[in-house]
Length: 413
Image 1 (cartoon, rainbow, N blue to C red):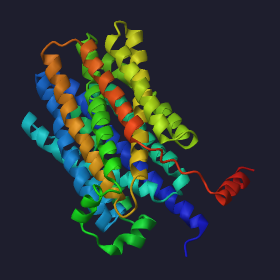
Image 2: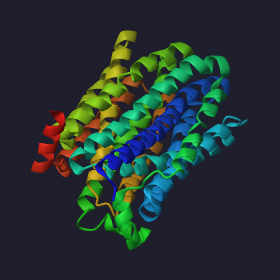
Image 3: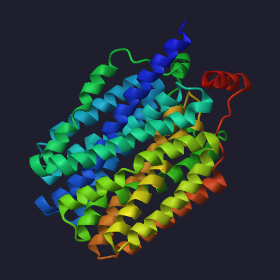
């Protein structure tokens, strides 16, 4: 029988390994935004072609989230997590040697497969290894590793890419393969999966159950939320370095400014992680979405550098709080037998928005549409997302039981 001490050690390993997988995942997504800005200059890409980089990646993430989420409910969370980490890291390293834009896009698709599969499986693995009343906070804290990855990507872009070129950044992206090797050495799986995995419900049955009377309303709300959040996130953040360049700033200076903007992502995650267990997921989502909408308007209308940076920092703070809470909110809605499938399909729905977002921004920029108008579009999508949660969402925060509260107080004393 596993002792309380052993459970803590096991969870620590699960949380740290899952966190590192998120760091590398975010690092890759962040790097492609900087690489896109460099490739526009080096390969003479049009705005539409640059938008394809994010969209092809998102197509891979769409498929990866569906497949990995479904397989994780059949084969185990840890095993699928290991495979997805290995896939995106190896594809990233190989893509550094791409000689044409078409070949580069093909590798971006395979990177997306791994990235999209890793995210919902990692969040499910962490969610199922903590008490329910701590689940929201720990999943949001897991998401905070995303900010670390983005900050690392900005540092690589600012300090390494100017010297060694954009290909060096992709070679660094192959490092997670080492993490996959470590994960193979007995990382424990979810206790819920170990106890229910032998039921062998089919993948099709699990998918159908998401639309049963028990889950249909929740699934609808979550899919709308994910589509709008990912449309806004990928539409805005994958274009941040390029937007700065198009506003007249030099490439390296733009990378430095975006690095400043990303520094507020961590406090955005930490504030959301604290609030989700204090005031609830629904309140945090609605509040942070409204503040992100206001931040988008400020950034889109900024005419001076201080206002641009301030708007970008506010956008990073609130929108990354939104994404972290969205992952926690999603895992709350499903039982363990279909949790990875539910999280995977919701994540996949979000990739539809992630595919469309960068393409629309690229098309609008090519058509000389003002940035003010583009960011008004993101203001509207954030407000609609907030209204969706307000009217269709429910509060999922679980308060600790009396005996658990007494234990918490004793530990605090």
